[in-house]
Length: 149
Image 1 (cartoon, rainbow, N blue to C red):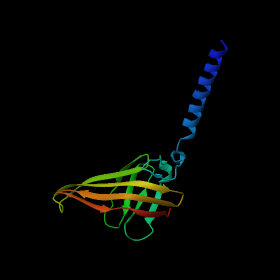
Image 2 (image 1 turned 90 degrees about the vertical axis):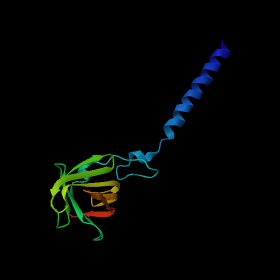
Image 3 (image 1 turned 45 degrees about the vertical axis):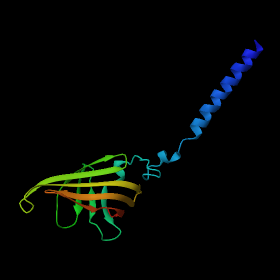
Image 4 (image 1 turned 135 degrees about the vertical axis):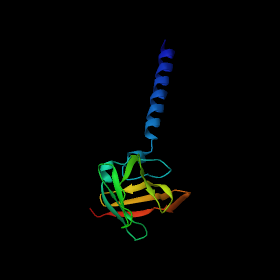
């Protein structure tokens, strides 16, 4: 009877140790809401962190005005379309479709970027802005943005 109690005690101790090691092995970067983290893990970004007018730290790309009603506008002084946006974890996707005689039909524009980090005043993104009409016309839409409003 004493041998069985010792065996059960050892088994319970081993089981408890396994659970302890499993819980300590978790990567803490999942708790980071400031960006995508490393190793390809995606972190959930709060929609409220994105609301505002953002401009790139260089004039390489037009800025973006992201509103709480899930519309946004590219700040380029040329096109003034209200894109509809969604956010999934740290991936931002905005789209708009319109008719253009100049392009010979329907044009769809997609803006898709991964949010690498975001704070109250700075957001680093990596992605593309592309137009689709006869073929796709992607351009890089990556860099660091600063909130101006």
